[in-house]
Every structure is written in structure tokens, then in C-alpha cells.
Amino acid sequence: MAPTQPLAVSLGDPAGIGPELIAEIWNQRGSLDLPPFAVVGGAGVLRAAARTRGIDLPVAVIDGPAEATAAFSDALPVIGGGDVPYEPGRPDEAGAKLALGSLELATSLARDGGAAGIVTLPVAKSRLASVGFEHPGQTEYLASACGRSLEDAVMMLAGPSLKAVPVTVHCPLAEVPRLLTEEMIYDKARIVHRALQRDFGIELPRLALAGLNPHAGEDGRMGNEEAVTIAPAISRLRAEGIEASGPHPADALFTHRARETYDVALAMYHDQALIPLKALDFDEGVNVTLGLPLVRTSPDHGTAFAIAGEGIADPGATIAAIRMAGEMAARRAGG
Image 1 (cartoon, rainbow, N blue to C red):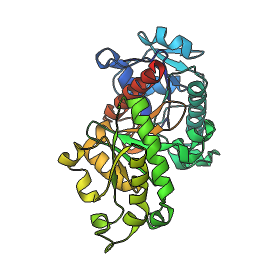
Image 2 (image 1 turned 90 degrees about the vertical axis):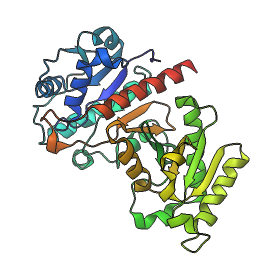
Image 3 (image 1 turned 45 degrees about the vertical axis):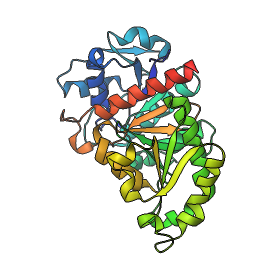
């Protein structure tokens, strides 16, 4: 299943591992059977990063995604002329500006229909903030760029073994009980349900919701959020015909046997979702943004400045992100 248009790949921080990974992936394009994609900006960075992995990378600088598919078989298509010197492991302001410009243009291409979707390579959030980026992360930026509220953009981490959604995301653990509401759980679960149908082709998604407290509160002896907040949201979902179960004790929800009983797990806070996903599928984990009018995926790892340019970074998660974006875009185009 392939989209009818190419994907747009944002460069990420040019001092990180993103450029070398995308060069490696294009070099293996014949065996990977991925949809065509174009990188936004950084032609020189990409060539130099490729050399750290022993690749002589041909680059085709193009004017827009319409030229990408024809160019893809012979050269890595790159849209736009923005560039900086390649200095792996040494992030700076110029690189952050290039990363931000790449993200903005790639998002615009996907939002306006020129690209089938966007794959965002890793950025350093603190560096972006230093050049005027006002969002906590790329997910929040994408929601704003699409004219959606942050509540409409749901982060899902997806790998071969597990799909998991953190209901609360980038907040202190001490704030989770206050932030977690019945309405939040209900709204996010409905977005997840619709996205699994539309983007992943699961006709009747099975949602498993974790408890917040140890042993899912153990009938109120270890907290009452399960009874007061989570269970009522589950009841509302079931009343709409959504197959939702829980609240489940989180310490047992991610075992092999338990994972066979659901399609996605909804966790109540960030690490409750990300620890099992990264333990099970670190090299193939994909960060997917659900609930937006465009397709967006990203490898579920960071810039890895410490190993950038050493030729040892694993491309598995980026491969998975490109493949998943292509499959999602194809389903949307076909449906």
C-alpha cells in the first residue's frame, strides 16, 4: 500500500543522527520498499552525513514534492536551499534555524496537500526555543499549524509489539492526578478509536485503559481516581459502542498475554506508556500524531548527539516511521 504523493521529511537537528539515518535509508531504498519521500533542506548536510557511513549520496535539489517521485530512484530529493556546515554532535543556533525552517515548510506541504504526509526527524527542543520556537514540541506545533487545539492532537507510540497512548503527556508526575479528568480520557479515547479505524484499518478497535494507582487503586485503598475519573469515562465509551476495558493494573497490562487482548493501551501518564514501548520496541518505535488533518509520524528517539557522525545509529525507527506514514496516507487517500 503506497500513497499517491511523496512524503515530506523534515531534517531535524543537522547535528544529530537524523541526516545520516535518512541517507542510509535512501541508500537501502531498493530492499526496503518504502514510499518515495523528499527531505526539506540540508542538501550539503545530507551529503556530508552520508559520507560518515561510507555512502556517496547523490542529491537532487527540487522545487517541490511534485518532482520527488521521478527523482527518487536516482537521487535523494531535497526541497529548498537552506543549509549549514555539517558538524555532528555540535548543535548550534544556525542548525536550529535550519531545523525550524525545515519543519515549517514540511508541515505546510503536507497541510496544503502537496505531500502525502510528514515524517519529522529528531530535534533538540531547547535549541529550537533559543531561535523563537514557542511550542513544547513538534506535536504541539503541528496542532497549532493545522488550526487545532492541543487537545485534538493525541500522541500514540506504535511498534510491532504495542501501541500505547499517554493521556497526560509532558507534565510533572505530581500534576497528573489534578490534570487527569473524565472528559480528557473520554475525548482522547474517542480520537484514538477513530484514528485506528481510519489510519490503521482496524474496524473494531479494542482499547484497554490503565489505572493510575498501583493495583488500579485496589478498590480505593490506594487512591480513588480509578472509580471517580477513569471508570466513568470507560462507561461513556462503552455506551457509544466503543470496546473499552479497564481500569487495568498497569503492572500487568503490558505482558505478552495481556497485549493479545487489545489493540491499543491508554496510559494515564507519559512514562506509563513510553517505558513499555521502549522496552519492547525501541529500535522500531514510531511516534504518531492522531487527530490531525495531516499524517505525521516520527522515530521514537532523540537527536543522539553523542553518537552522531559515528555511523552506528540504528535506522530501524526511522524506517518504521516512513513506512507507517506511507500506509496511513494511502488509507486516507483510498477512503
